[in-house]
View: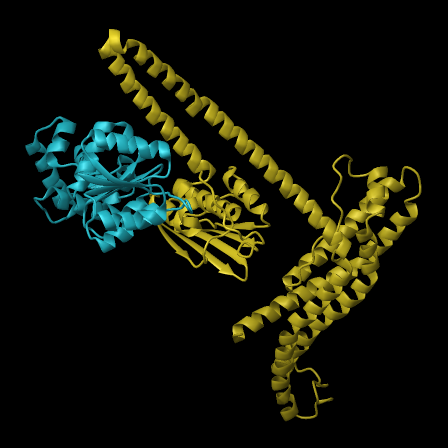
Length: 211
Length: 428
C-alpha cells in the first residue's frame, strides 16, 4: 500500500516511516512542511496519507487544511490526521464531505502499533478511525443518548471510533449477533435509518453525533 | 428620541435639580466647618485630628457631586492621591498627605462657586416645570377653591375667564420647555463642577501610574504563580513519569534474554506510562495556551470550545484576522472561564458568545438563559478574569439578576490596533 507522510519533526517522521514500512506499506514521499503536502497528495494519489495537523511555516493547521483541500480535488482520498490534541471541531470539518476514508487520532495512539496500523488500513479501505477522546467528547454533550442503555452507549462509542461489528464484538467479548442487536436498538431509539454497510453506518453515527 | 424618553429624562433631571439645591445649601455649613478645621490645623494635637475629619466631610460632599454629575453623563474621576497604607484615619502624616494634595484645595475653591451655580441651576431646573404645572392646574383649582385671580404667563393680572382658560396651554408649553431643558441645565451644572472636581492633568497621570503599577504587579504575580504551577506540574507529572519510563525500559532491556515474558510485560507498562505522560502534558499545554488557539485564533478556538461544552452554545464573531497573541489568550481564557461558570452554576440550557470589534475596542459578551444570581465576590474565577483583562486596560461587567439571564461583558480597548502587529510564530 502506498503512503504519503507529512510530519515536521524528523524523529517522528522517520519513526512513522519505519513503522509503516515494517508493516509492508510503501512510503512514497515524506514531506516536512505544509506547502509541499498538497502537491505531493495530488501527484502520488496514495492509498492513504498520514498527516500532522500542525506544520511549518505557520505552525497553525495547514496539515488539516491541505487534507481538506486534497479531498475536494480527489474525492474520498483516504487521509489519517494526527495531532498532539484533538478537537471535535476539526473532526466535524474532516467529516463534512461524508465520503469516508477519514481518520483523526492523537499522536499517542501510534505507540499502540497494532491498533494504529489497523486504523491506517481501515482508513485506506474507506473506513473511519476517530480518536476515543473525540468520541467521548461527542457522546458527552448529546442529551438524547440518555435513552440508550449503558451497553448501547458503549457500542455506539466503539462504532463512532470506526470499528466494524466484528471488531466491536471482539473488543467487548460478545457475539457479533449481540452487537448487531444492540446496533439495531440504537438506530431505532435515535431514529436513524438502518444500514448494512459498516462504513456507511459509522458515518451516519458520526453525522448524528456531530449534529 | 421618543416622547416618553425625553419626558423621563426631564423628570430625572428635575429630581437631580432637587438634590442639587439641597446639596448646594449643604455647602455653606461644610465651608464653615472646613474653615474652622483649617484655622485649627496648626494647633498641636487638635489640628491633626480635626482637619482630616473635616476634609473627609468635604470629600464626601465632592464625591456626591461627582455622582450627581455622572447622572447627567459627565464623568468626573476622583483626583485624590491614594492613601498611603501605613497610617490611620488621623495624625500628622495624614495631615501632610491632605495638605499637599492639590485636590484638597481645589475642592475648597469649589465650595462657594459650586454652591451658587448648583443652587441657581437647580432652582431653575425645578421651578420652570413647576410653574408650568401651576398653569396646567390653575383654572380648575382656583375655580374649585374660589380664590381671587391674579395672573399667569402673559396675562397679568387675569381679567376674565377666557384669559384664565389660556393659562392651560401656556402651562403645558412651559412645562414642556422646562422638562426639555432640565437635562441641559443639570449638565451645565455638572460641567461646571468638573472644572474644579476633576483631576488635573498631573493628577490624571498620577492616577494612571497608580493603576498601571497595580495592574502590572497583579500581572507579574499571576504570571509568576502560573510559572510555579507549570514547574510543579512538570516536575511531579511528566518528568517523574519519564524517569520511571526510562527505568522500566532499562529493566526490560536487562530481562529480554533471560525472561522475555516479563520483559514484554514491562514494555507494555512502559507504553502505558508514556501515554499517561502525554495525557498530562496535553492538559498542561491546554492550560498554558490551547493549541487550537494557536492554530485557529480566537474565533476558531471559542467555536471549538463551544463544541465541547455540555450546554448548547452559539458563537457569533466579526473580529477580523488574528489579534495579538497575549490579547487572544487573555480573551480566550476570560470567555472560557465565563462559559465554565455557565456550565457549573447557571443551570442554563443555552449560551451565547459574541465577539465584536468596534473602533479598536474588542467587545466580548457571554450570555445564558440560566437562573442568574451570580455573585462576583464569590469564588476566584471572575476575579481572575478581571486581572487578566486589566493587564490590557480591559474591563469586565457582570449582570446577573435573580431569575437570569446572566450577562458577562468584557471590553478591551486597543485590542484590534496593537502596535505590535508582526505575526508571532513558534513551534510550541
